[in-house]
Length: 186
Image 1 (cartoon, rainbow, N blue to C red):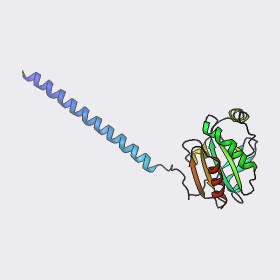
Image 2 (cartoon, one colour):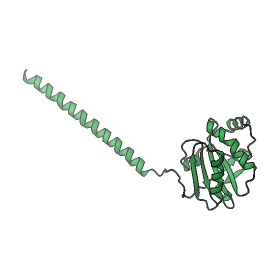
Image 3 (cartoon, one colour):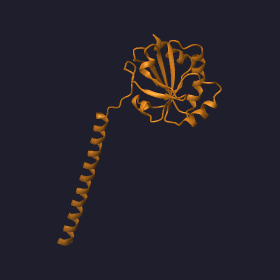
Image 4 (cartoon, rainbow, N blue to C red):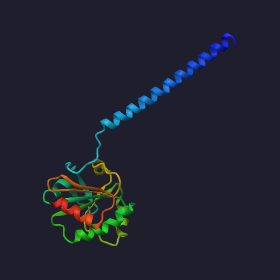
């Protein structure tokens, strides 16, 4: 092996080392940026004991509702749902049955997550029950994001002081709905 061959091998080795170091540094920087964004992000899930995020939404009937006005004299059950969600479809008739028995101390607000009125009306027309509680339209998903809602359905109970007193992801049973009402009205 002559001198030129040795120089070529040394240059290839240096190039490989530089490439390895560059890849390691890039991965380290990407991990650091990811960790930094996760630590400095203000988004966190609302938990029991937190103050509820106030909002105004328009209902399917065109009325404006505001959470802080509802909680002045009632507990509020917020049920986040979507038309494609089978558990949402299954729990709504139970919520409606309980709601029609009387709701003087509480209000149920079904917050639809980002769908248009036509989709919602088709969904409702396919139910066996005529829903009597308000359907709020969160078409921009601003309320859903403010509450950092994950899986649907997610239900949150807010008491008259505006504090979250109960939260459950996934479908509610008849007993769960009654427990939400009890928690929100205590």
